[in-house]
Image (cartoon, rainbow, N blue to C red; front, side, top):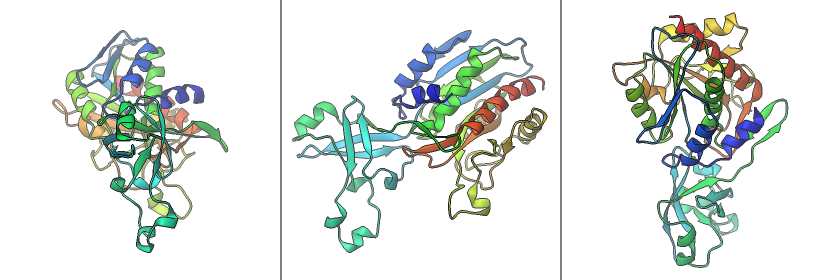
Length: 337
């Protein structure tokens, strides 16, 4: 699992630039039908052993957070902004890779040159730059024209007792689970939407849901775990090592109560560790899907993840396996509704 997740996460694909991810996924799945919609989402259909009464769709987004080049100064340093929700604090001193593959580093004034007031606050993106070693604007523009992308340059590796760190685990983990479902022998027919532009407003999911028009959707995601030092009680949200996360509500969706209960019942019946969130926060493609077409009954199953939207997303392999198992069992459970 880790090696295949590494393959997916090392591909660069921010919102609007998902081509490399889509091509990799399409080359490594074996559906009965597949096409790319006008926004770039990959839509696949896999025939199961049975046809359900209700049309079922799974969804996971291909895009990751990243950066877009907005300007180049005369000394060849790149001005940039975030694509998706990135805290400037996680970018300082980080290595990046340009869309063309050239390396760079995100910089700002060294602490020795900062005033006492500057040291008390984090810089925003307008005070940061990407240094690619260029000597002039013309030299830099050949590698990074305005509107091109840059990405965190970060390895994926294992550490501790089953922990995995890497960029873009949000949501290549969900994509990998759907790839396995398509390449398996599912109990029921289902559609699978590998969506684009989730990180900038769930845009691909909205279009995909209108096209597929499912009755029931299951969104496979990662979700914020804050089980770290100094955080206690409800503010921990969810915890690594405690299994799949099934949400009842977030900032974009009040989830279908029947599917929420069914997920817990299915997990219990199959010995799959499961938990819910203790704080209403965040959102995902469900927010767009559940209000599409005539309305879609929607459930979200997520891998708990520390340090989301950074170059160091951290998950635990046991939680990934729990989400994969529950996603598979839920296909049979909703197929029988």
